[in-house]
Each structure stands twice: as C-alpha cells, then as structure tokens.
Amino acid sequence: MAKIQMKTPIVEMDGDEMTRVLWKMIKEELLLPFIDLKTEYYDLGLAHRDETDDQVTKDAALAAKKYGVAVKCATITPNAARVEEYHLKQMWKSPNGTIRAIMDGTVFRAPIIVKGIEPYVKTWEKPITIARHAYGDVYKAVEMKVPGPGVCRLVYEGDDGTELQETVHRFEGPGIVQGMHNVESSIESFARSCFNYALDTKQDLWFASKDTISKKYDHTFKDIFQEIYDSQYKEAFEKAGLTYFYTLIDDAVARVIKSRGGYIWACKNYDGDVMSDMVATAFGSLAMMTSVLVSPDGNYEYEAAHGTVQRHYYQYLEGKPTSTNPVATIFAWSGALRKRGELDGLPELSAFADRLEQATLSTIESGVMTKDLALITTLPDPHTAESGEFIKAIRERLEG
Ligand code: NAP
Ligand code: MG
Image: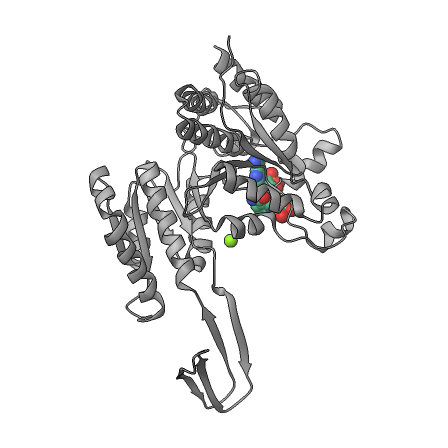
C-alpha cells in the first residue's frame, strides 16, 4: 500500500513520562506505516527543556506560528519535587503557558463521544466544547486583607494625566478586597478565536457573563463580542446556518444541562476553569478530552487535555503492565493531520485522520478498551487491554 504523502510539516512537540511512551507507540503503529510523515520535531521533554534553558519551548511555539499546525504531547510543569527529581537548573514555567502566550491563543476542550461511555447528563448527545479565556480576571488579581475601619478606593492615573476614582467600600471593621483587570486586546483575540473556531467546526457559539451585575467589567466582554460579531462574522455565520448566542452565566448553566450538546461554550477565565472540569467529568473521563489551542490568526496546536499520567509511568518503569488510555493523544494527531490536509489541499490526509478516529472508536465499541474505560463502560464484558495491545487492535482495524 502506497503511503500518504504530505506537503508541509506538522510541528511535533514531544513530551514526558507515560504520554511520551504512548507518543512513540502511536507514531510507530498508527502513523508511520500509513503516512510519509513529515514533522519538524521539538523535544519538550523536561530534560531537554532544562538543557536548552527552555529555549526549545519558545522555538516550538514560533514554529507553530510559522507552519500553522502543531501537535503536542503532555509535558511536566515543574514544581519543587520535579526540580529535585530532574536536577533542574530552575523551576521552568508551564510549557503550555509559554506556548499560549506566544501564539496568543484560546484553548478549546471537547470530549470524545463513543458508544458505551455514557455522559451523566442523559440528554447530551453531542460534545460540548468549552473555550476558556486564558488571561486576567481573578488569575491576575491583587488582594488585600483590610485590618480595620477605613476606606478602600480604586484609583486610575492615566499617563496623560486623566484621573478616575471609585470608592470600593467604607469598612467599619476588618475585611478583604480584590482588584482585578483585563485588557481589550486580549478579549478581542479571545472573541475572534471563538468565532473562527465556531465557523471552522460548524458549531453554534454561546457566550455568557454576568453583565446585569457587572455593568462595566462583564458588560465590556459582552459588548466586544457583539461588536466583533456584527462587524466581522455575522454574514459568515448566517451563511453557514450558525448562531452566536449571548446569555447570562446562570441561564447558560441551566440551558447547558438541558441541551443536546453540539456547540461551543465560551467562558471567562474563572467560569472556564470551573465549567471545563464539570463538563469533562460529566462526559465520563478526563482521558477522553481533547484540547486545541487556536490563535486569532488561525494557527492550531492539538493535544490531549490530560497530563503525563505520572502514576502509570512509575509502574511502567517497574516493568508492570500499564493500561493507559491513548485515545486523546491519538485524536490530537488526527486533529493535526486533518487540519494539515485541509490547509494543504490533501484530502487523503484528512480522510486518513477520519479513518484513524473511526478505527479507535470502533475498537472501543467492539469491547476492547483501556482500564479507565472498562471500569465505567455500559458495554457488557469489556476486555481490558494494555496500552500497546489496544493500539495494535486499532492498527488491525486500520489495515482491515
Ligand atoms: P494526569 O497526568 O492527567 O493524571 C491524573 C490521573 O488521571 C492519573 O493518575 C489517572 O488516574 C488519570 N488519567 C489521566 N489521563 C489518563 C489516561 N490517558 N489514561 C488513564 N488514566 C488517566 O495529572 P497529574 O498526575 O496531576 O499530572 C502529571 C503531570 O502532568 C504533572 O507533572 C503535570 O504538570 C502534567 N500536566 C500536563 C498537562 C499538559 O501538558 N497539558 C496537563 C495537566 C498536567 P489513575 O491514577 O486513577 O489511574
Ligand atoms: Mg482547573
């Protein structure tokens, strides 16, 4: 069988621990036999990040901007324990944070739906994709403990001499206060990434905040979304038969629970943090969540939403059989291949991505799955496979 040819390379970002082990298996069993795979390889494994003083992460992000499509393996975000474990020069920043800052992107997370893994919410038939604004609000807030009676004010001193003041509260006794911010350019990038991704994936877009209470802060989010929609996206949405829908966050939550799924839910930073864990858990498994970083100018970085599965890796190092779920990492590759195929006009490459996903899902639907899924499936008598065995079963279907 002739291998599928590629034109432009995919930016390949290798990672750490168990997912690094799966990465190699996926390439060897599911990609290289079928595709003349072209990648530009960056080793984001922690040892190599340390060797290069984390330059490799920045180079990889710049390459993603240059080529437009990247696929990333999960990576360790170092903490004190990791600094010791890997004898690091310093506690390097989160690679995902570095890449997101360089690409100026928004992260979209969506569950992979498969028969036999049923969502807790009975009505959910299609995936709900969460888009989380990844800048500012409470994550960049300053806070104070107020010791006793006194007044707290918000003060703005403009470089041009403008001054604005608001009294936050006149305290009669001890209390707490918080100052948070956002910037219009970041909200605009977020909005454009959301509208683009909605058109790209042919899904409606919902956005919610609390503008009735927060008449300047949240209302600015609402206004920016509406202005960008009206001036730049309305026509394309109408043509595609899609809707942009704004509502209050509490109303959105109620509607989401009663919905059938199949849309993108754009959330402010904190809402996205909370709601993505809620949606992921309600869909059944963190190991079945995909994640894609989309920049406002249309660059894509695909990955699994889960981490490096450290606990399984230590078992693997002891030579114990491991049944780690590779599905989200496989879907990261299929997402990148499909997008590369679309951009380069290579329908066979996109069709292969579809076949790879189909083969993965039908393997699970036939009853062969990793332990995490076997524990929660509604299918009778599932066969629990080790990672390698599961990937080989997918390969058989791809060849069959
Ligand atoms: P994790 O790797 O997501 O794993 C947490 C637990 O979830 C696992 O121990 C396992 O549960 C289950 N799990 C997650 N993915 C699974 C899979 N594919 N198959 C089967 N079970 C799966 O989170 P963590 O252990 O908190 O973090 C480990 C490392 O990953 C950390 O160093 C962190 O910095 C990094 N991380 C990276 C990313 C990223 O690169 N995007 C994201 C998050 C975390 P059981 O142990 O019960 O089997
Ligand atoms: Mg969280």
